[in-house]
Length: 262
Image 1 (cartoon, rainbow, N blue to C red):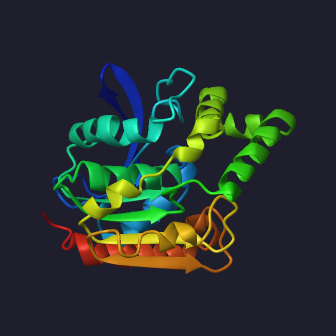
Image 2: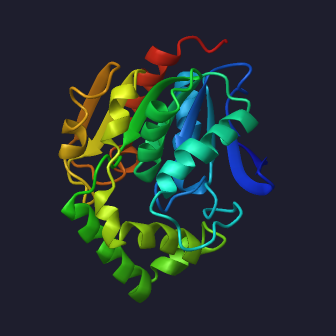
């Protein structure tokens, strides 16, 4: 792993690379969940690089990990803003030339918005893990529960191991999701413009979403679509059903990114 920083609009973004540089091979770009960061991908980037021969790039969004803060409160459009304003700058600054976007939870929603909204020719394929395409009651109930956990358990201290300011990471995400108007969140309008191959994964026991998040994709995305409801997995199949999920992601990457040489 090579740890680094990118300057985006005068602010520092924490980044990390595994495997070949972008001029030497395609790149798998990892977009983390609503409480994630570079470190919380754990060994996934290294193993994806080894399984595919591609580069793997991860970054902590502003407000997460060791990146510069994102002032509170976050707007309810924060995922759209990340996808259509910040992510293009990150891809440019990282000199990424051909990519598979892999997004987990909020990161999956951001990746889908970017794939459909920007239609960047550098993006050859898209994989989502437990992404939210619309809001479900179970989603809000779980986010309400974790707010209580943050205030009454050691969750804040545990997040503090990974985030310079855990209050920004948690309250930015949690506050936006629990705004009553956030129930209107829906990104289905971007689906018909997703023309690249898409793999959508969902844990069968995910407390933040149901199979409906996969069902909504059928007949709407323009490109080839694979979906997989993973038995025994919850909100993080890449950690809870690691071997099966990694194998599926690596096979998808090899199929759609092609050779390790540009």
